[in-house]
Length: 309
Image (cartoon, rainbow, N blue to C red; front, side):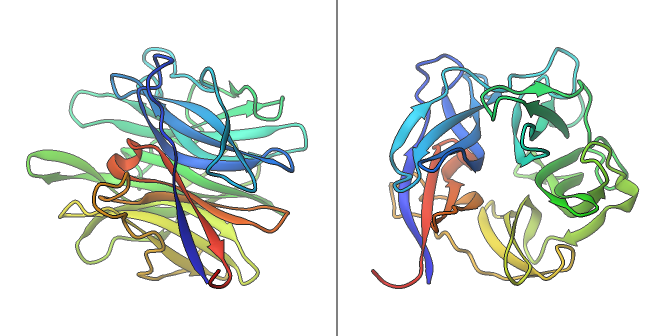
C-alpha cells in the first residue's frame, strides 16, 4: 500500500493576465459525483497570489475539465492585512448552504519580509463565489504568532471547530535572505470565527536541521488523525512528512516522506510540498500537492493504491 504519483496536473500559463504561474497550497473539494474542484493560489507577474480553482475528473484527476476564468478571492484593499496576496488555508461546510474559505493574507511591511494572518470568506453558491466576512483577520497577531498565524486545516466538531495553524515567531537568515521560522499549533473555537490564541496548543515543532515546519493538513481516520506537514532545513531542503494522532492534539511525527522528488528534469525534481488528501465517497483517495518553487511549477496528484497493480 502506497501513494503512486500520477504526475503534474496543471500549471497556469499567463493567458488571463493574473495567472502567470503557481498553484499553491491546494485544497480539493468534491463538488459532484464526477468532479473534484481544487482551489489554489495563482501568482501574477509580481508574485502576488489570488485564489482560483480547476475542476478535474474524479476517476482520472490528471484530466482537467475546467479552469476558473477569474479569481474567486482577490487581494484585499490597500492597507489591509491581505493587500499583497492571498493563498488557501482550508474549506469547510458550516451548513448545507454555507461554505467557508479560510485563507492566508499577506502584507508587506518595512522591517521584515512580510506578515501573514488568517481571513475568512463565505460562499452561498456552493463555491462559485466568495465574499469576505470582514476585512480584518479572524486569527491575528498573538504572542506565539507575532508575524504569521496561518490556518491550514479546520474541522467541525460536536463542540464547535478545531483549527490547525502555522505560527511564525522569528526570522532565520540563510545566505543573506531572511526566511520565517514557524511551527504547528491547534486551537478550538465555538463558532469558527472567534479564536482565542491564549488557548492554542503547540502540536509539532522543528527537528534536527529544520528551521520551519508548517502547512499542517489534517485528515480524520478510523484510528484518529493524519497530519501532513512541510518542512524546510538550513540547507534549504523542502520535504513533506506524516504525523499521527488519536486526539488531534498529541501527534507522533514520522520521518515518512510519502512523495519523493521526481527524476531529474521533472516538474518536482527539487521538492514536493503542501500535500492535501481527499477521500471520495466512491472509494478513491488522492493527494494533491505542489512541486518545485513551493508551487511555482503548479499542481500534481498521487493516488492511494492498496496493492501492486
